[in-house]
Amino acid sequence: MASTSQLSLLKQKLHSAKVALDEMTEGNNEKLHTLLQFIGHLSLACKGQNLELDNKLAKLRHQLSNADNVEESLPELVEVEQLLKQQYNHVMVQLEDSRASLSRVIRQIQRVESVPDKVKKEINYYKKDLAKPFHTFWDYIPKVEQLVGFYESILQEQLAQGDKLVVLPKHRQLAHELAHMISEVEFRKDQRDQVLVIKETLSNEIEVDSLIDSYQVILSLLLDNIAREKSASQEFLFALNDALSAVREVVTDSYNNTQRSFQLKKQLNREINSRVDDVGEAIIDIDDIHSLKSQVTEHLASIRTALGRKEALEEREQTLLRKSMETMRKELNDLSKEANTYKERLFEQQKLNLLDSLTQLPNRAALEERMDQEFRNFQRQKLPLWVAVADIDHFKTINDSFGHSTGDKTLQVIAMALKNSLRDTEFVARYGGEEFVLIIPDVNAEDIDHLLNRVREKVKSIPFKFKNQRITVTVSIGAAQILENELINETFERADAALYRAKHESRDRVIIDV
Ligand SMILES: Nc1nc2c(ncn2[C@@H]2O[C@H](COP(=O)(O)OP(=O)(O)OP(=O)(O)O)[C@@H](O)[C@H]2O)c(=O)[nH]1
Image (cartoon, rainbow, N blue to C red):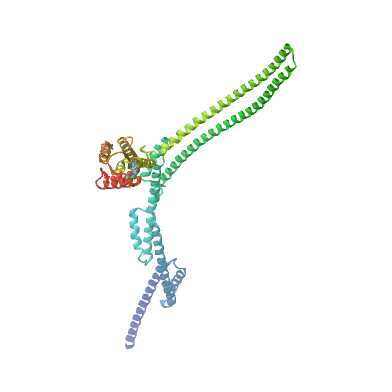
C-alpha cells in the first residue's frame, strides 16, 4: 500500500515535473520565436545599408530557427551587435555630411534674386533650423522635401516670368545712362518720335529685353546719322574733285593751245617781217613805177595773207579761251551750289546740336556758348547780368500719377511758356530734366524780382488738365546777379543754391541771392 501510495506520489511528482518541463520548453520556444521575429524586423530595417550586416542577420535568423536554445547563437549575436554599433556611427557621420551639403545648397538658393519674398523668409527659418544636428534619417528627409519645395517655388516664379531675364541694378543704371545720353544727343526730326518712345520705355519699369532693344535702336539711329553725314561730305568732296579735275584739264588745254598759238604767231611774225624785208629789197633796184607798183602789190598781198592767217589764229585762240572760261565758270557754279547745300546742312546740323529735342529750347551746349558770350559782353560793357535757375515743383508726382508722356508734354508746354515770357535779348535753355536756366542781361536789381515772379506766375496760370483733372504746376526759381571779378559759372552756382533755398522754403517762389 505504502509502495503503491509512494509510487502514486512519485507518479504525481513525475507528472508535475513533466508539466513543468513542458511549460519551460514552451516558454523557451516562445522566447526564441519572439527573438526570431525581432531579428527578422531588424533585417528588414537594416536591409541594404551594409552588406555584411545583412548577411550576418540572415545567418543569425537561419541559426536561431534551427537551434534548440539561444545560447548556441550567442557569438553571432555579439558580432551583429558590433556591426550595428559601427553602422550607427557610420549613419551619424553620413547625416552630418548631409546636413553640411543642405547648408551649402540653401546658401546658394539665397543668392538667387528672383526668390519671392515669402520664400525668402522661409529659407531664413530653414537655415536657422539646419544649425541643429540630425539624429536620424527622419530628421533629414523632411529637410530635403522642404528644399525641393523651395526649388519648386523658384522655378514656378521663373516660369511665370516666361523667358524674361531678371532686371539687376546694373540694368537700371544702363537704362538711366541711355536715357541721359538720348537727352544729350540731337536726332533728326524724323527720328524724334522713335527716340521719345524709347525714352518713355526707359523711364518705366525696364525689362532686360527692352533695354537691349533700346540700345540697338539708338545705335542704328546714330549710325544712320553718321552714314548720312559721311555720304553728304563724300558727295561734296566728289563734286569738288570733279570740278577741280575739269578746271585743271581746261587750264592744261588752254596752256597747250596758247603755246601752240605762240609758236604759230612767232612763225607768222617772222613770215610777215621777211615779207616786209622782201618788199624793201625788191623795190630798191626798180626804177619804173609800173614794175614797182606790181611788186609792191604782190608783196602786200602776201603780207595781207599772212596777217589774215594771224588774225584767224588769234580769233581761234579767243574762241578757245572763251570756251575754256565757260567750262570753268560752269564747273565753279556747280561747285558753289554744292558747297551751299553742304553749308546749309552743316548749319542745320549745328542748329540741331544746340537744340533740346523734347522742348526745342536751346540745350546745355547752347547755354554754355551763350553764357560765354554774355560773360564777354559783361566784361566789356559792365551792364547788369542775371542767371536764374527754374525747376518744376514735384514733377516726379506728375510722371508717377499721369505717366511719363504726360510729363513730357508738361515739359514742352512749360518750356514754351518760359520762352514766351522773355524778351528777345533774354535767353532760356533746358538745362536737363525739369530744370531750365534763364540768362537775363540789362535788368536792374529792383526789376529782377518782378520779372522772375511774372515768369513764375505765367507757368502757374497754365490750365493743365490731366485725366480730366485740373492741375496747377508751379516752378521754383533761384537767381543771382554776376558780380565784379566773378566768373559766370560762380554766378550760376549761387543761383542754383538760391533755387535750393526756394525749394526748401515751400516751393512756388523766387529767391534772389544777394
Ligand atoms: N517725363 C519726363 N520726366 C523727366 C524728364 N527728365 C527728368 N524727368 C523726371 O523728373 C523727375 C524729377 O524728380 P525730382 O528730382 O525728385 O524732383 P521733383 O519731383 O520735381 O521734386 P522737387 O524738385 O523737389 O520739387 C524725375 O522723376 C525724373 O524721372 C523728361 O525728359 N521727361
